[in-house]
Image (cartoon, rainbow, N blue to C red; front, side, top):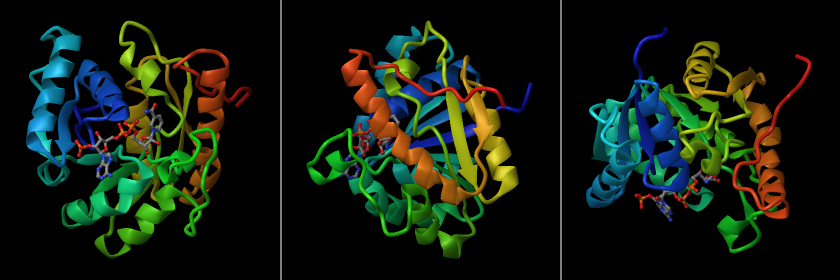
Length: 227
Ligand SMILES: NC(=O)c1ccc[n+]([C@@H]2O[C@H](COP(=O)([O-])OP(=O)(O)OC[C@H]3O[C@@H](n4cnc5c(N)ncnc54)[C@H](OP(=O)(O)O)[C@@H]3O)[C@@H](O)[C@H]2O)c1
């Protein structure tokens, strides 16, 4: 078993942040829930404690995004696209030499459009956009968790039956992220190569949202076979 990780979740008050926090707490990691508003982070911590029924909650702390990013060894960004740049601007100084895992998906709903359509970004993907913003801080940006639905993560009594497609240019950072992803029961981490592949992976998510709608599910995921 690997060492306990200190995981900061930026925008940890949303569905994806809460889902990941639950799974990482259950696997014994230390989790910092980040928010722009400490009260909101504290309320989320209370919600998580109710779900976990006080079990495994000693390693859980509410923080501002700034404090969470400075405390975490691995910092997971779970904010909508329209908040990505503004949020990174507020935590950038704390990310120097760290691993920043980007779960952002460029959905058209971020431009008041449809959640089953993606939007093209100049940089190629949300993760590459983060990497460009953070390039003067020696941050290892990894793209992960984009295709794992919060609906599956939050159902803690069930395994999450899907693969986690992971892209990044720093192999050590990618390995650590793969280790973190595989702490979620049912999840298999797949190394998808360089960060530029995030532009393919992020585009799968609107399809999964579409399949959720068409199949009245909240848990649709993706499995790669025969590798
Ligand atoms: N939900 C899913 O099933 C899922 C699955 C895969 C990938 N993702 C991706 O993961 C990211 C988070 O998803 P989510 O559903 O958890 O999002 P969300 O609930 O809409 O937002 C997450 C958090 O981001 C912060 N935020 C929201 N709007 C903001 C703004 N305009 N400026 C600054 N901060 C803002 C808020 O935190 P505070 O108010 O506390 O600061 C909010 O609680 C998205 O990029 C999404 O595409 C989601």
